[in-house]
Image 1 (cartoon, rainbow, N blue to C red):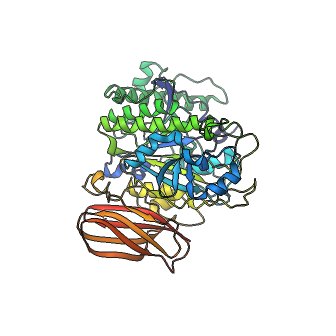
Image 2: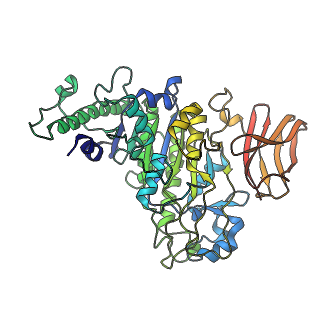
Image 3: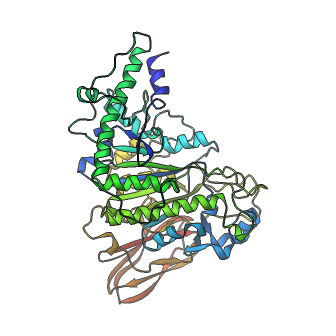
Amino acid sequence: MQRRHFLQTTAAATVLPTLLGGLPISAHGFAPNLFELTGGATQTDRVLVIIQLTGGNDGLNTIIPLDQYTNLMRARANVAIAQNRVLPLRGATGIHPAMVKVKNLFDNGQIGIVQNVGYPEANGSHFQSTDTWTSAADSNVLLPSGWGGRYLNNEYPGFPVDYPNAQAPHPLAITIGSVASNVVQGPVINMGMAINSTSSFQQLLTGSVDTAPNTLAGHELTFIRQMVRQTDVYSTTLQQAAARAQNLSPLYPTAGVNELADQLKIVAQLVAGGLQTRVYVCSLGGFDTHSSQVDTGDGNTTGEHAKLLSLISVALDAFQDDLRRLRVQDRVVGMTFSEFGRRMVSNSAKGTDHGEAGPMIVFGTSVNPIIHGPNPTIPADATFVDNLPMQIDFRSVYASILKDWFQVPQATINALLPSSVGQFPYVPVIRQGTVTGSTPAAELEVTGFSVFPNPARERATATFECQGGHVQMVLRDVVGREVRRVLDRAMPQGQCQVPVDVSGLKAGLYYCHVREGQRVSARSLSVL
């Protein structure tokens, strides 16, 4: 066996996780290039939490298009949530009743929804689609490396030797509850490192490892032992951070009841404890709901899918409450993703099969608390093979978070997310001004801002509460270019209704931005 093949196929499999709060934790090694990529060069303390919903979440039963209900019931009557049980979010969009706590977070400005997210030429395979999401490659390009691993390998081919060090004492990325993510897979080895506390104290002090046997695989074994030795150091760092902070929220369920809440509880503790980690990866499985997705009766509001959505809702609510009590809420944003959505038409087993596009949830006090993109369209004659088409490429969300949250230069983003389509359209998932401005996030929102009808054909109406001052309202395309200036003058105090002329615009997704002094908001607007 060649060394390259051995390391590529076994590095991730041989890492040994330690336990923190009863959960295994894998730490992905620090490298200055990725530190720079995620804002470390500017000494940022911002954190990104990624939650993978493994199995392919049914987006149509999660974020529900209320304006499509007739056709929705035709397509999936045996699983669709009864319309009178759906919780309204904004306009013609609702959410599953099991996610009442997420709805409350949305109403309080801590949740954003990105609709119809996917990638071109989607693949219905769990493995291949997950590879696409984690590698950020085009679906017809098979890259064994992840975006983080490629950067790490290019800059630090000798990793993990001599890490951590005085300049880089903490891991940059942490996966809780699983082995090293493909995001940090390099071309030769997996750059992710697991935490283990079984090596001797003397080996931790000297950096030595046990002598390998004099066999053909001896040097590979030495390398693996070096990885284990390094993860012991990171384990100590994690334990020290955990000892400096205690969770404060009473909203967490009892340990073991909610797997995702248990993971996020650890994230909150480590962030508050001063760990300099920038990216956390959590996960929740069980979303491959081919059968028994709902229980019979009660408007299809109960069942396996409802239980999973409730776990997400309770976990995010407790996490945000804990971050607030720990006074680190403005440092953390997060997002969910699943490898694909489900098909429009349900099957006879009260389930749904592999589809294409689905929604993403972004969360935190710094997210733009709007619904990005129009509701999905359900045709009256939908068939079993029909899928929800992608309207927003998932890499647009990645790129926008890197740009607005971590302040990554566009040239670096383009290199990180290579694609035949070029630069990805901008989606403002982060509230403008929260990173670069000095005004607190809560003071930036324009009260009561909405645009209706949405979608619109010729004209829409924007409504908002004006404080009495100069107001600017513009329409921007998905790239961020101004396509029409709607308003640019002083407005009286009180509720304002402004006509928005969309005649002559190409059909597609736009964003209506309104600004009054330090207050600014944006709403998506679909033009038919």
